[in-house]
Length: 349
Image 1 (cartoon, one colour):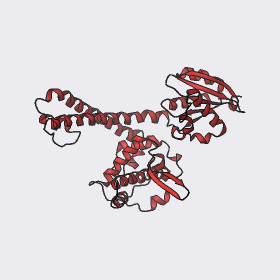
Image 2: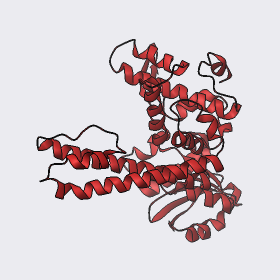
Image 3: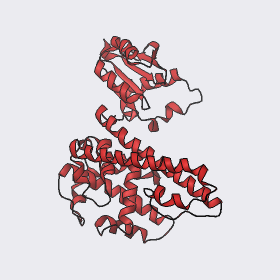
């Protein structure tokens, strides 16, 4: 019976290694599957109803969805928690697949299984990642232009990145302009493309994800952050309490407790890196000179004024964590945001 079979599969870029076990833990076969939808569908047609363990990676989202369509029960292991697999002196693809299958058969909870977002959310999130890549590329070009001019004893005037191409072109020394002209053209083109993506993101928020409007009530949270938050979490009901969102996004400290020692280390940085950076950026705005007075700002400033090493950085991370909790609470409660919410949201969370 296929429903008693457990398959461990080590994912590769061109092919995958599988190791199959029966209900007693006996190894049935070791196989190799080409990394195509047709090949995977053909191989697992023999194992409909089986339990499959894979490790999270580039191909795990679409492969897990495909296996579920075939009728398999899929566990996507968290690589951060699988040290016993990747930290080995005798590591191989076959051994990895065997270990995944053995662990999944005996105790699937040890895999710390991840939940991949749906195909629509995954596709929509690509728009945000494309915008982020364009912004980073434009920033590198701007820094390159400023650095080249500075190395020749001149300085370009301070201005926003959006207006850099127009305001600074006239201040480039004549002998450097032939080398930098194409850089300025690229910066201008990237700016136009970023504005086009911003317009698409705004329309997507209004038409497909109206819940983002509730999140944008908080000062400093714009369409990009709100949409990324909704697409990353996808289902707010995944969390029993809003305070669980902080650890999910890696905004809580690591812990190293043993006996009478209980250390607090740096934040875990687990979860989605892009969303975490957006939330920290919002926190910097809230704590900055243009941030309006609110409980989030007061909380951050109280931490920053304690002094000490990296006090401002700790304050920004603390505000980002509270902001993540607040955004989840606004999402599921559908309530209006109160800048001075006091203990009301905290008790509900």
